[in-house]
Length: 536
Image (tube, rainbow, N blue to C red; front, side):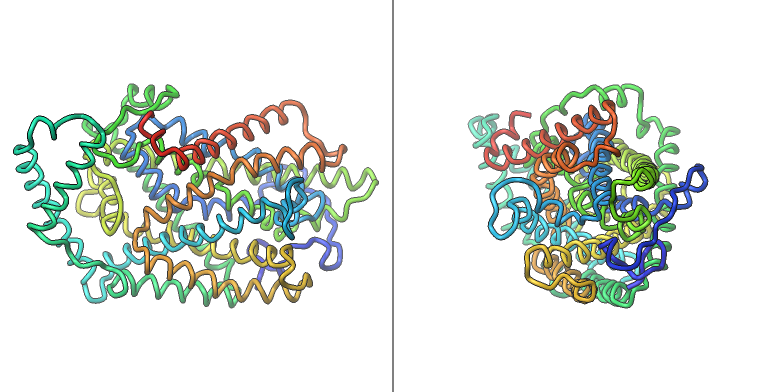
């Protein structure tokens, strides 16, 4: 496999080959020429979280959770850099580093056992993403047209269902109109059963259909590209597509300001940055804040990106260029220099994905929320495309389908490559396979086949992309406190004193860790006590 950034044979172990010690660049142009890992991560980040769950949160909460979205993007970068610092200075991969964190052990550290659970659920997220790719392609380039006919049938069903719901609600007794939560749920279930009996639901779209076929095609394409090592070319093309669609999205957001009914007002921004919770929405089965916190686990540098970022830093060569740690002042100087490059890399990518995420969120809040639309199921891609209709009109659907394909497929591709590297290393840390470089490369190649196929099969049997992605967000959110603890452990117990950061950095790192603890803790509490969602 070719290295994405430099075209070298990949190695997660800086000491696997001859030392390639190099002095770090001192000038800004020199630093910019050495960026790469963060841009790879940005290509994966501007995907399911930004394109799907961020607008979904905006659709449910309006502008009220803008502050949470911004914090979710910015706050994790300090933990990301601390993970990268430890990898560069020690040459230790993330799996091996997490195995060093104190705590109960059963063959490996307790954190790695939870990572294994989260990892499997994350493959479901990739299933949701490749399902979104299949939906966008089925809508834009139908093979038989059955998926588009299914959507039309569902549109007609929804219109009839709304009409019948209004009719049935008009017949409700005062007792059934009570605001008691349990009664409202019983009423909704009763109405749904009667509506389904009178109309009948359309057939499911999985197992057969254009979306299934396109998802299968791109799963095979991904396997072929990853296995044969054509990574740099495809990643560069995907980056251009994602960048182009992000520019269009930002233009769309600014163009909405010319339409008063869709414009983002100063009042909207004030509400969004007021650190307040959204008002309750009775029609939703899930509170907007709960969706927002699940989104928090995905947007920005999510749990998977925090774990995979050091691998890309090592593959880029930051660790090899620094050289094996020794007691000489030359090593400390090189380490500080290459860590400066890594900080630039992480910070530049943070600005890129934060800007894109805010744009997607404001579109969801301004268009979908005001239109009463909530993207999900087979209608997910079509509903998200409504964000572009006020500006682009009849071209909106085609524009969004192009963007959905570019953004989602780049995420599927990059995430599959990252998962292959991380899981191949995990096999070594768990003691299942030998730790030689040849064995690692063999496992990376094998997992480039196994993981995309598994993700695709998850979507085949659970054809609900938004639910799969949100489930992964919850699982990743639950791991955030564990990574916060690991980050602080690396900083205070494993960091070479010659390259320790200053007090301001420590303060920001603690804020990052506290934010990760709060988000993950809330996720756990709402899972254990679902009634908490009704309190927000």
